[in-house]
Amino acid sequence: MSFPWAKHYTPAHPFMKWMDEKLPLPRLVYNAIGAGYPVPRNLNYFWNFGVLAGLALTIQIATGIVLAMHYASNADLAFNSVESIMRDVNSGWLLRYMHANGASAFLAVVYIHIFRGLYYGSYKAPREMVWLLGVVIFLLMMATAFMGYVLPWGQMSFWGAQVITGFFSAIPVVGEPIHTLLLGGFAPDNAALNRFFSLHYLLPFVIAGVIVLHIWALHIPGSNNPTGVDVKGPQDTVPFHPYYTAKDGMGVFVFLLIYCAFVFFYPNALGHPDNYIPANPLSTPAHIVPEWYFLPFYAILKSFTGDFLGVPAKLWGVVAMFGSILLLFFLPWIDRSPVRSANYRPTYKWFFWVLVVDVIVLGYLGQAEVTPTVVMLSQLCAAYYFAHFLIILPIVSAMEKPLPLPNSISEAVLGSDADAAHAA
Image (tube, rainbow, N blue to C red; front, top):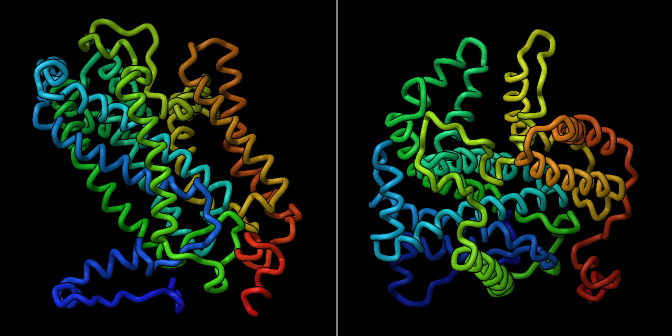
């Protein structure tokens, strides 16, 4: 968005003038995160999570590059190479724990970022492209995380690869060729490990590229805000620096505090003990579960237990699992309410919190042993998940009576006399 009141970059030093002529990188940075980029003055700490996601990705790329120097993508050597990193490489244990817990940190930050977007209507016009690119980033992250989980080649890595890639074989006609192509054979082995390692190394850089597009798309309409009201003038904004760089700095401090607590004190809390056992194709673990960030989708997959309309349950589960994510692509057109923020949508707000609880319960059910009760609850929660987006949201957006919106962001922050005070 073009802000007429924004400060413009004017280099004073001769070298900076020369640089601005030849390669205007300082201008780009100034306009992106400096005083040249005004943002709504009422952003809360939930807007920190975009920066935190970028920090988490940076940690993952930096630690991943070093770990790749010592990792052997061979089914006979992979497990021992990970143990060698932990025991023999200088600070290898730290790098590995940073990378393993960094994946969880990255996904946790992105989940909060997504739910913030759902609550404040950040997917609505004119920010549809920002949202769509965000969903693409989420899909790439999930693929990267799955392939990374396979690399240690422990029991859960091997059997996770066996089970998850096996779902593709349920797709009619093309399923088996896709399954064989993914694995490079008929079961996880050297070919699969090499494929997953190369893609796991490559995809974070693809994610970084899409994030650049995501930020670029965001800078066209400007940031959303907790009221969902558009910026109407300079009284509604403050420069990104120093106001939000300081606020983001506080968020980074808290994030690093929690992250370091896991790395140094609970490094294996989010992992599975079976992954410290070398992969054995002849010994199936008693209970195969993915990482915590896949559990809600795994619960949706497991909720299909019987054939329906001549379609196997396995195929229904795969379609539902992928559909639960792909559904987010259509959200800007499913929710037709002209009001963005749930703060002014009393009915939608209740259903939003029901959705949050539903996803948390799905996560719990995803790691629970399969019993009739767990299957029934998974089916109910999965049904609500899809009903929320396909039935409840369109009805609520059409029938809900929103609360009165403030006339401007400054009015919401400073009170009803704010506009008059600024005008005076």
